[in-house]
Amino acid sequence: MALRKILNYPEEVLRQKSLPVDAVDDDLRVLAQDMAETMYAAPGVGLAAPQVGVLMRLVVIDCAPKDEPPQLIFAINPEITASEGEISEEEGCLSVPGFYAKVARSPKVRVRYRTLDSEMVEADAEGLLAVAFQHEIDHLDGVLFVDHLSPLKKTLFKKKYKKIMQQKEEEL
Image (cartoon, rainbow, N blue to C red; front, top):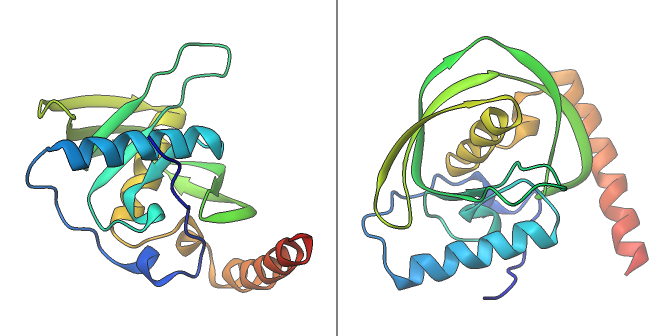
């Protein structure tokens, strides 16, 4: 297993639509394990393949509280089949470091995906897990959480993010 480099906005690959995974093979399993290690090291609760430069419909998610055992989900070709309600919670993103904003999402979703064992899963997700699935699936479609902001907030984001990235460069 190896840590992968997490790409940051405005990398082009983050704006591209990912391709469906046709077959689960050893290469995919290695990528999935690398993504999990990368997510935990970051640290984050989710990571999509495009964030490490791979345009495949694969996400890893673990929303378990820090004091509980991991609940790692490997989701291949995930899709939301139903959603219910709306909440507005603060979100961040490993590809948009240092910036957080409230985003409207559904607090309950039904998801369908394939596991690394090629098993098809349909499950209900609530709260943080529901938000994480929506956030990561957006990545597979080339959408970032900042795309959900109002035009004014997007303008503020671009100014603030530019400063954040300048500070990061100065620290190096």
